[in-house]
Image (cartoon, rainbow, N blue to C red; front, side, top):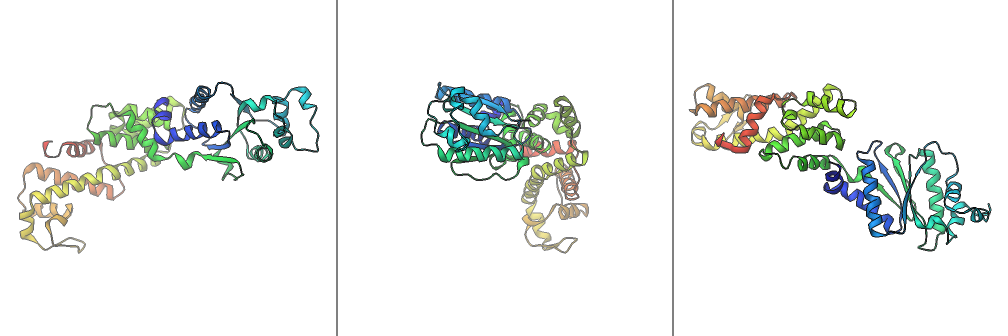
Length: 355
């Protein structure tokens, strides 16, 4: 799944590629990601492999800054300069200025990925990096990737340092596209794939790994979203959302997918029985709305006319009219539709009159 996520989902791929392209062009960057970015290690390894394929001499190394107290410039000096070069350092210059003037140090052959930065350490590293970038005059330089999570808030802008922000590039649309890619080989009509993909996306709360697991359940997810969600959260050791949160997510998906199907049926029904409806015009609905054309009459009014015996319709059309009217009312009252009814709407959308 991680290969599909990082290589085929457009904006996730662009996020990874922008990191690769910026640092390959020797631009130091700050990347901001969610606290738990799914398949994070796999993404890092893809970046490492791509950089190695482009340039075999420069290496990507990681610095885990969690619990670190040493000033960033001193830390870099100690890790990436030989002892004799360290001895040349004098406090009359900042560490950034000094390192920028050293052409023959290990630092200049490295991409350095600094992770687990607190807000305070991010500010310290950014100060050092800004000084270093202002002072360096050669393409023989170290390249830094400062990684922060969303808890640090808005990123500061510094000349020569590019910010790449996950939430500005990747969103719900990408999660849904991921689910659709995973469902592409499912032998079901597209409307089923759309419904399951929308459910997986909405219930996963933008968590790609959970979305993938939910998508893999396919029809089980459509039939019992809450049970399926709880099962996958337990498997993945994720805390399940409150039941009311997931119920709201399911309702929003049904509103998005099913409501247009009821409109599709209404248009088909008014087209089929338009001559009968036209003889009854103008019609006034319960709430005072007046219909002057057959194609504008709503489901509730159509059902009312059938109940009064004013429309002669086929038995199957009447049964569907009752069902689609009930579905529309259920959604309008912020309630979810049972899967038995969902299934019939999806079959109608997939095949129309053939069902």
